[in-house]
Image 1: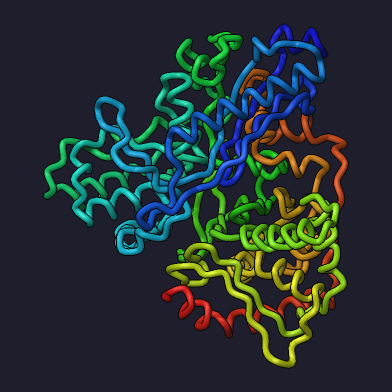
Image 2 (image 1 turned 45 degrees about the horizontal axis):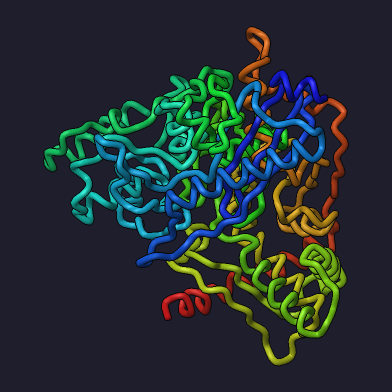
Length: 525
């Protein structure tokens, strides 16, 4: 293994998630050799959820330094060579740059629900659901707001596209991430030309000195060459100077695409659920939906296959806040509990609760939620005087809340008779064995599989895409590569939904929907 690290027979995957930047170094067998991480958090500045770009580079450098230290600790080697690198990040949002490569506004992330007018107008223009968080919705909202910077834009990208650009000099984007900027055409594996022309015609009277196609990154599919690490990029990632330039890169991708890869859910009739700060389901379609749904986004796999996506803005943030409160109490009382211990114990306790949570209803909404029509969010806990207010019911209600909006969206696909052969879960919700898996199976009324690699998440997924870029055979599809070379014989556990759990969740969800006006009113305060 030491020789593989010295010779660079490895792949590095880095993903900038909502609360953590994670790096995973994998070997030729696709197994994890070392990891690094950095914890960060978005900020609400002047009503906009954002990360400062200085945070991006400080976090990336700390994450990479953490990875280097892990390599040194495990193998006694200084990391200087890597076979191939891939960058992934949370999708969507707004990063506009001028001709001198200066950012024109603070980064507006996917979490913002401030583009409702633009998203609605573009949806009508395209006859295609344009979510608020998509880059084009942000761009058009800025135009409607008559923001001064619009005339100066020369490049628009996502967070993954930005980091990749700074490391390689290439203004490119993987098709999965690109499909969250604006609609793509799976037939051409590029932006939908008809919609590009419609947008340009829509804003023609403004007289801007640019056309939409000139602002957007070049679209690449999995396996294509996406440039190499420059000397400047090497210094950006590893200021110590140990990392050598010239390392090839795979196309940068969004966290949705890397989640699909990490769960081997890129073939038709497969689906996955990624559950962390946000929660979303991706289902690879074998036929078009009968009509447009505002709750369903149409994106693609990293190889360009059409995907129905149910994206919900909030998942574990409120649970994390409650665990933090319990940790504060445990510390105050002298208990020797780590956060991991509390997660495991409290998650497991939820399984002892009543199937309908005993009358407790929770809302985990830290921000607006388009699936349920919430413009703004407000975490909320409700109960009637006769509710069974126990710790088990309290935790079960919080876990139900984390998947409630997703269950509503997935119900649409069920009514469309979309065929799904398997659903795989990954992300922090599934870290405690069986619990999150049990809750999701009840919410979707479908078997849910979790692999041993579920906690590795998107960083491992982009690492696999990087390895595919370097080692796939001529004509070998991404689906075939993953099936035969990565996931063959991979240990996994499947949980079939319990009938009483399904019935209990549906009863709870009815109350959840009935309480939505209360949540809506609270969010307006």
